[in-house]
Length: 269
Image 1 (tube, rainbow, N blue to C red):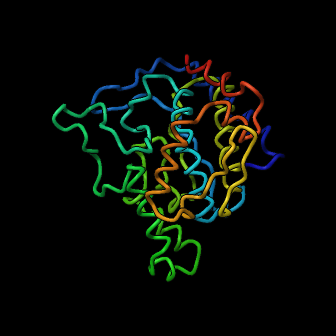
Image 2 (cartoon, rainbow, N blue to C red; image 1 turned 30 degrees about the horizontal axis):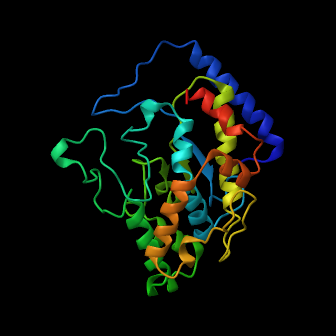
């Protein structure tokens, strides 16, 4: 997140970088089982006081994460198809983690790269957050940094193997968007960067028990931590992910009509 005065300079810096990249030699990304496809990573500041933007608490961060999960299958279409099963940007299904492309048939169904199953698995992470919010451990966390560490400790939160990395919250204070494919277009990069920052700004505002409804969303969104139990939260999250459309997302974010459609043109979707 940046202030208005430096926004123009930011765009100019991106343009210079990509002009230089276009004059470099061709790079072939490693798409084998041991590597990954080329991708664009975008970090948005959440709680680093040395960077621009408002400092967010754990409820605001979870509200942003909840909205991302709801629109995950829509946002998937903003990236090239070869990135959809990248082992470093796996899709986060509300129904649970699916196998990765490099797994053998008899290993499918078990998520590798995990020391703790609560990592990268949406249902497990939601259950953990819900129970932590009501635990004595959280009551002992008086300061906000301690609460952030409790919710987003490395190894217990969706990390660098999924489309949204929460592990940097307790290190750099940022949220990492890992969904976009690599590009040498400064226009596409600037548009994606602005979209990521706007996504955080919009959905971080929703921290009350009942979030505001929009014209296309007839039912208000309930914060994950405000359901009567974790299973009810998961049920609502699964239903919302199944019903999500680009039009709903544009409406919630106040984006121009067919804004996402234009972004999808670059993704060939």
